[in-house]
Amino acid sequence: SYEVTQPPSVSVSPGQTARITCSGDKLGDKYACWYQQKPGQSPVLVIYQDTKRPSGIPERFSGSNSGNTATLTISGTQAMDEADYYCQAWDSGTAYVVFGGGTKLTVL
Amino acid sequence: QLQLQESGPGLVKPSETLSLTCTVSGGSISSSSYYWGWIRQPPGKGLEWIGSIYKNGNTYYNLSLKSRVTISVDTSKNQFSLKLSSVTAADTAVYHCARAYYGDYGVWGQGTLVTVSS
Picture 1: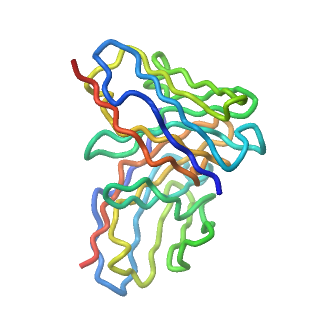
Picture 2 (picture 1 turned 90 degrees about the vertical axis):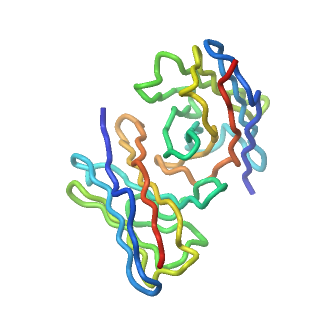
């Protein structure tokens, strides 16, 4: 079955750029999206269809997807961005969904 | 504003069937091109996609759960449901219902904890 892999943790200093990767075989041929989840809350979609930001998501969140890797980039990271981030791949041909294992972003 | 709300028993005995319902308010479950899905999260662990249903009734399931999962929709009640059979302690999780467009889940319910225990 298809799998996508994320690093368990990423650390970044406030104001710096955080990059979280998501790897999978030919992931660039599928749609990738990203969710932010804070403790005790439901996930929030922050990037969809590889690069698009939902209404209300700050511009500092951006995404890319090419080859075998999708990347979530948070520019000018703020303390409020500390959370778990999950990538998700979707195959438009099969409608099959798979989540990555999640990355804990620490802002220190 | 679209809202989703999960409901169902919070405690299920091993080997029995877990049954949850998601009630959709603020929009019709049969309108537009959306997938209605279930995602779960064991305590302290990551997200796992269970499956989804499209407005035409087509269902899509996680292959690892496919033999035990049924997702159905009741358009008259604006609800969709999850049944997971032969549960074990490994099925203990927060279960979320959510709406997807092109595979991205933009609207989520608050989630409901289901514990499998005798």
